[in-house]
Length: 223
Image (cartoon, rainbow, N blue to C red; front, side, top):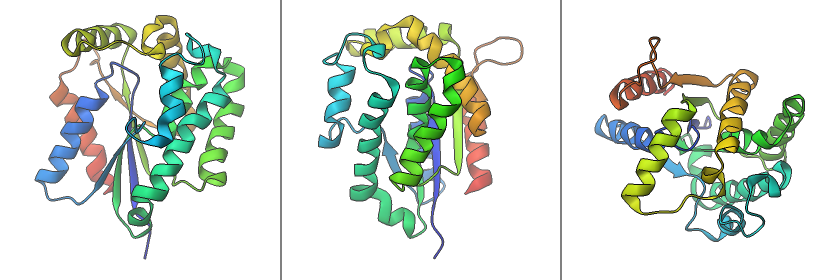
């Protein structure tokens, strides 16, 4: 029996990733496509304890207070635990797995702490850790929501006001978010991710539905 397929939706905070992920899953369900959904990090699981401590600022108030390699392991362990306890068997038996974030998030958010000339080495280390050492599956398709800092910040502030929630140490640091965007572009080229633009060629912010149609078209091509 052949292994399943793993499709990842990736994007920085405020990219509309969660909204588009829900739309995608709802449409797959409506069309009778069998799949299993995973969302990272898994904040409700014990395996995310170090992630929560890190994002809550218990190891330092700034993202750079914990270096990229150390912080990456926090998130990698959560993915390993999820694979072993939740979706690994299904994937090995041929299931379609849909993921909201994955190893790709480490590449963007932890890679942003590195100098540009260090990124290639870090990217190789990260993929070796998770895919070769931990034996996690490599994604068959990564869709990156290509947003800019203005859209990102506007959406985050609106979300915070609506939900009355506080930003974590990543979301509070605008310069860090800008670095994440720069790193994501490098990662897209390095790994061959598929970009989904959040503005059209004239600079207009695209609607959620327009972006969703792009996403769904790419997904349908691979499943």
